[in-house]
Image (cartoon, rainbow, N blue to C red; front, side, top):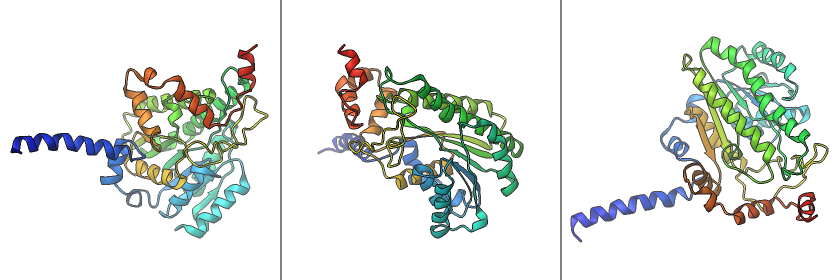
Length: 331
């Protein structure tokens, strides 16, 4: 084979190998590059004051645990004080922190009147907030046609308005210091449609729009970075605690049929994103990550994502086929 043919073969092989490696990854290309050649979390985050909401379980708990190993000062917030104390004990036992380095601060995102006082309490304890990780939130799982408006209202109050409120309380302090990181743990549901989660997706789309706009308004504050983290399905209690069509009912199902990422891996990737000031990252197992790229960049996405695709997603949530929605259609 001539040298020219070898060159052409190599040019064809390299993209093929890259594509094959992409189908094995669990993060978008920007985050993948940062994980390979970027700054390490231990190089950047050590010694910072980090406030994590939704820290009583799931991604928030795992983030707190991994951050504690970096020797940060932690503020742990959620509604369940006992669970926050449990997370604190885990951080003390397994991390590189002492009792004085962790503040347990109960917080209800829906109670916006309490956010200013909570911010003052953090500043009084540690003197600053270097990173605010807005991780707290709730979900639901029901057909849009059946979902009570109260569910939409609660999810917007907590996921969107609660997060915006707390961010607005912390932001003036960061602007005064001209440095800080605002982080929102969003969702792939803020990018692509996911059946049975119309209210949840709406709140996440709103958060994405808010943070994108906030970034444009901070042009005079290059030391303040904002990041949207969009995980896919992760092992947590979000399914059990999800509302159904009513706020008085929770799903109580873990949707075992759906493939989910380990929480520790998700937290590890989030810390890499924070260390490298990435603006938006996608974190998910395949094929969910590939589907996100298709939905975002391929014009014929509606043809690719057929009705069978959405039907399989719905079946993964173990929703009863004889629910109110289907009965209504057959009336």
